Length: 469
Image 1 (tube, helix red, strand yellow):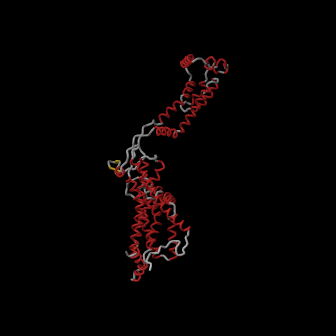
Image 2: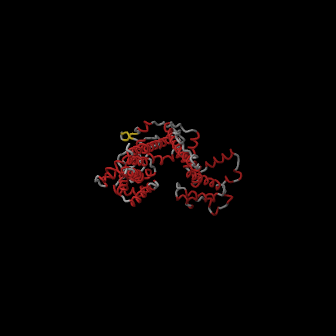
Image 3: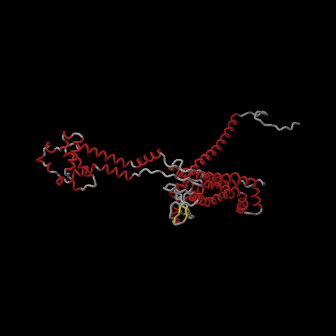
């Protein structure tokens, strides 16, 4: 008798080789390995970019200084446009000065009327009309200024002597006003130079350490405090306000979501009739498909006003409003996992409890729920990871103030909301850039470890318990 093991291969014992099934299996394997590789690549990239938080930033180079020069020009476009307009006005004044004096004065009088520094009564023609413009003496050849004669275009030495003679002559008020108008572009240019800051050398920013990120970095009323203020002359990076804000919102959300989801799962498994169970379970699971931005917008517009009117809070957006939004996002996850764990409890345990005279409520609370405790714990851990890494709800409903406080009605700032709010405006590969990626790495580690704990340890322990091992 042949005792060798029989190897079942696709081409043996009349079995056909299905090429499409073979290709499908290989494609599934490749996709699985690619997904694992993508997770590792993302993990490596996040940690690599986070290393810039621990590297000092050198002073700005020539290229950066040139970019800094361009930046004020962009911010002062309105001032430049106004200067261009004034320069054009000055050119027009210069062009008009070569015409006859009456028309030049007439055109310049309209410009002087727009000057706020000149008095209104100075433009009254009856007070300032020179004698040479009287009607009876209106002869162009007599009143044509000397500087407009052809012989005035002489050499530079002669022209300079002529200008000195003109300056020595007494000037009328209108001529003084024209001189002041010509000086307006120069005055505006000087004022713009005084407004635009001079180029300064950017000081070297010191590299961070783990101790600096977790230690107090400022004093308020002689009390050491934790400050998150990355955009200032002296940047301050502290993880403590962000961690406390994320934990506060997450715990509030779990305290609200866990009892509701667990009791709903118990009702669905132990008390609800079959037709009602088919309605409740899909309805709650559909809630998991709601975009988080919709929940955050609901909290921002409607829920925040209701909470403020109900509790009389100072801050309209606070950690309690954000916690309610987190609860709405977490309830479907906790409910689904808990319901699966309760349904996995063997029926003989329920039937034995009922046979001993226990009620349905006693059986659900004292038999079914304790047997499914590992699964319920896994559901809570998954909900914690979901709430801790939530971005849009925290960004829209918590107020985004990095405050270290135990009051649930004060604004907070979570770690995920910090990344969403600041990453778009941060300087590339600066210390602030590295700190934001370091926050992302911390979120990645926390959520990954929580999900791995719930999936590989708690569920495994639950299965061993049900199998009697």
